[in-house]
Length: 442
Image 1 (cartoon, one colour):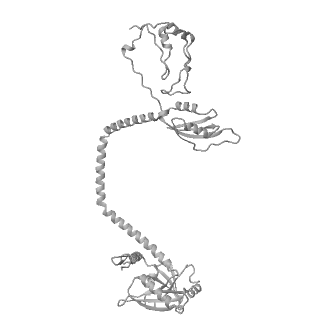
Image 2 (tube, rainbow, N blue to C red; image 1 turned 180 degrees about the vertical axis):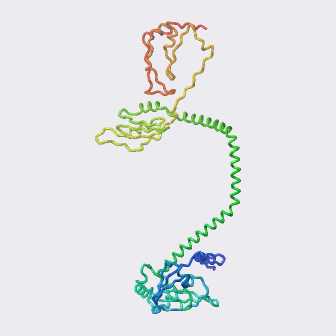
Image 3 (cartoon, one colour; image 1 turned 90 degrees about the vertical axis):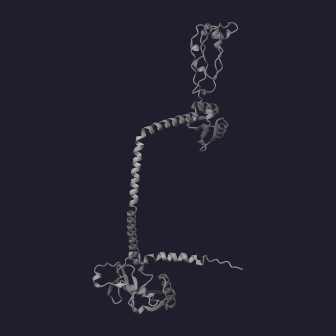
């Protein structure tokens, strides 16, 4: 029966180790020979155990002529041989991180000090016959701190010093981890980042040089565009006239849409006057398109909203804010919004009068002209009487202007439906049967 393996493998390759190897390669990228020159060596002033001092750079001591041009920013303290234990390891060729792990394991296993008390440093010699020789130095952290305190006068204004042990085999000094070596690493990293920035700038300049032919083609394309714009400029008058024609068409369409959805304010005021209860007083009526906002005082705001919701042509009746009643007041202050239906409150357009024909426009010598009532009202009975008896029609008093229904923009009326006054008794006494109508002359 085949077993199920949880190892992430692809064609026998462990995918988990692939990611680890990639991270290790990126971490040691600055150590590659191609990029190692971007990380400059940081000079260090070494305070030796015999009381003297020397300058070191990149694991080598600087001679006297070179010391005058170097300003060290890092300080290291050499440990005396009395508190140092030395070991030597021979390892196969491996990565730098693997060598560091092997040295740490050996130092902890061979340490005569307590757990967590050991500190170590190591230095690599050139590999010989396929092996790497590692020189290791061990010391107690407590003894190292005590020695640093005894050298406080020499370390004045030096900050956190590094701890070194000189190699007995001519190799680079053995640097103990966990002390001031991080400062030197940060300084080297800053210089390395500056080198990367300069390298990136150089690459950008090279890229700019490489794209110069493309830029020339771009300039040619710009010239072609300019030539096209010249042609467009010569054709601008015709295009402008065409745009003006299209704008006129759009304006006419917009005007038609506005007139189709325009609300008649007088019709709205008439409807509100008829619908609102007697105990309601409006303070503000705001009309925005098809939206109406009213503010005022009423005895019962909820009943008012119900009444408005039952009105035809009113929809989406709502109160943006709650009705409030001041202490001691008898009415509530309300704010109500609703939408209007243009079919009920829109502008009612009336057809333009048709011009009479020449034969109809000729005035008659025998038939008097009759008055025409307002649109939407019943035909007046005084017209036949006036035609039958001109003297009676002249004696009858004319109805006052206020008796007619006021019209605004067509069939909309304000203040409700008005009633026409009854004709005077003198005019009512004369009937069409008593006075026959004379035929009109042609």
